[in-house]
Length: 427
Image 1 (cartoon, rainbow, N blue to C red):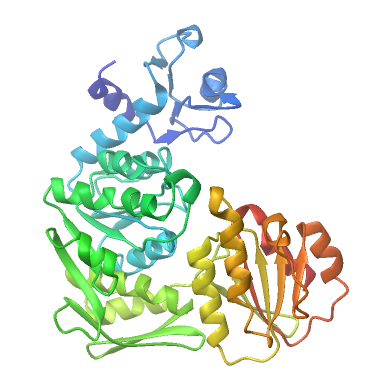
Image 2 (cartoon, rainbow, N blue to C red; image 1 turned 90 degrees about the horizontal axis):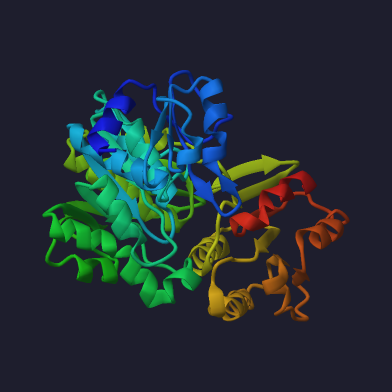
């Protein structure tokens, strides 16, 4: 079936659904497949639950004209999203990077929404399914779209760019994330730079942190809008950055006091300022948007519980983000500091070495009590009196419940699979 014909069905619907249990009236259900499920089996159930049509890719499930048979349901979803994107008179900002993508996306949205009707990726729906769903959530009232693109292997960003066709692109950083899939640090740089390749090929524009050597070098021949610290040659010159513990930024005649923890969040804010300035958002509107953004979902949240102050940054972790979070934590002038750190995933053959390096990074901070949680950290346990190692969260939970936990300043950080936010229940 031609994509234009499928699009006509889409225009008659109330939107897309991929879960037959979460159907809104007149949705189109798209039957996707995974290693352990076949969405075609649930197409009839989706229609019974209120869907108007169901896109399927196995002929045996086509019972009547409400079933739209295609060769591949996922490919149809992606092509539909791209076709929809082409019909809209909309500017799209695409972003990727090793760390800070979701926070940066939220900050850009907070700024642009002060002047425009914006829509952005919900949560972290940033993959080969999430990006199409994001695009299909845009409509004729949307003026600016912000699309987060995640990847864990080569050619993935290239594919996502072909779907969403960003007009502007920003890479937060190149860090040690998904090393296993990308094939090492150089593979990360190559994979994330697929965004730059798309921008160059299509005469689009990059937002560039000129203080990042790799970003600066790779965008020399691109249309670009730059920001930097104390650099008058940049489009946005950031005059001062402070963290104690929240990030405060000064540019032009404006001071922004954010609710974000750590120096590593400064460039996320700077990118949002730069994009806002380019699109004519006033300094006062930029300040209002950024100062009213409150992080959530376990991302750089500052909490208080039972006399303890807590930095909860347990949504994800990799060597780069862990190093940045600890560097910030080391610099904070607080008493009774405690760091609870969980294993970092998807590091492949470099996992053991990266966990060892992180422990060594903490060696000179005897004033901090460290709790390392997880198999990979536990493989490098040592006899330092301020360092404690646990094979699993359950063994950590048992030991930690017996420790006095009052008037501490606590950092909690680990990969998503560690679910270290559970530590809050122990405090």
